[in-house]
Length: 100
Image (cartoon, rainbow, N blue to C red; front, side):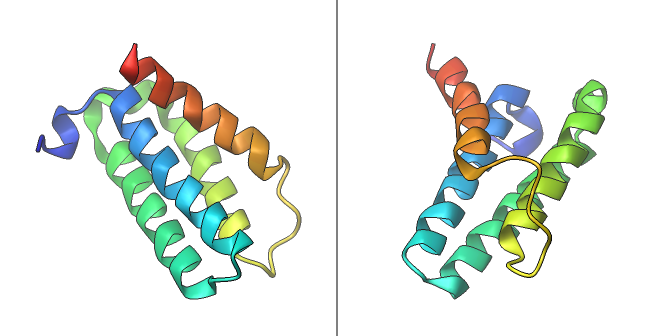
């Protein structure tokens, strides 16, 4: 398996999307601990992506993504500015780009 820094931004974002999708799936099934684990992993991957120097032009987008994931993961957080389906579709586009 490639190191995180060797992945393209599309591959990195697709991996983040997989964790976000898991988070929403576990939330829907009322499995709070598993949802939290997926959220934490997604946030770790966002942090790794932000630390990757080739992604400097994506910093604002990554900060927004980090905030959205945190908001969705925290049930006490105010309502996020987007809905889960919009976030999933946004991240799915990266997965589709990787497959193309």
